[in-house]
Image: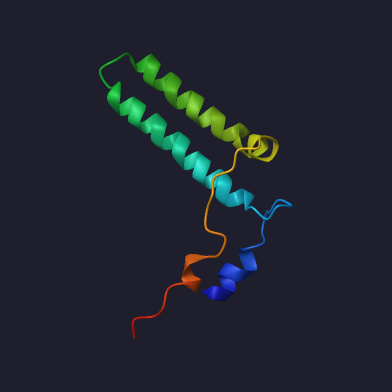
Length: 90
């Protein structure tokens, strides 16, 4: 397991060492979660409004990889994988 974590740890990294893939997945999760909550809250409103919210969310996922490389906002995450800090129980 640690071999896989170490072999993929350098994948898609920026010069400052931050992982772009982790950044994109985290932002996509936040976008889809917010869209899902909005659709659930607005379930009694027009279907066109709910579809508009979902369309904007999915469309934003298409431009997210480009914007993640261009815009400076980064989500902080642990630099080392958590598996290094966990010890086996047995």
